[in-house]
Length: 282
Image (tube, rainbow, N blue to C red; front, side, top):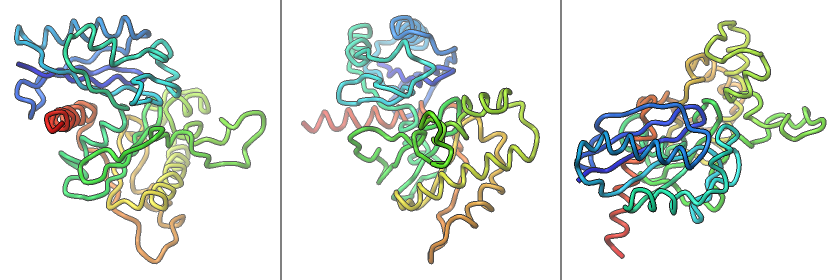
């Protein structure tokens, strides 16, 4: 029997397989489909190929946007996957795959993967922030996603209240730091930004965000991932944070994510094991 894992991001979707529930096997990467109906069908096709004739036992994965875990629907924040919003995803996946399906926010699963496998391993409280097409994050405590009533949405954090004009979006972190926000402000794909003055500005905004993460979550370590981090120098982030963060105790270590594009799949694998163990205890 095999387990299917997936990570549905704003731009790309990754589908993986585990033949033992402990290790990640082959992975397929595709552009994220515009609608849930099409996306679930494509994930099923890829899963059957990856399973290589073996029976699929369970499915687990993450999806971008504000995810209501109790209802298994995206209720907001998924600007790049509007066709997935309002759909009862757990119900749809289980109808198509005919096996138990476990869903969470994509950033939360990436944080779980980092906390259990790499950068945050052995730390009690891990704060994870991802800066990619969108901006997300989660708090991981003792190797589990910390319980939450409304999900974690650092992208909605107000970091520049003085910028308010006609919309509060002008004040939010995602406007200044997410891939979509950067593209809109500088009219350029973030990956093509080479000017140090812009990179330094992005590092400053990230430092502001991390300062708030520290004072609200009090983590042992902060792990930062996502494609936009390829253009943000961590040395500048630390330098800005040293100026912003003023406390008796020094700020926690800040590390770049180590699992790269597959962090969400590793997190899905851990989450699958945790949910199945929880079910077995009931």
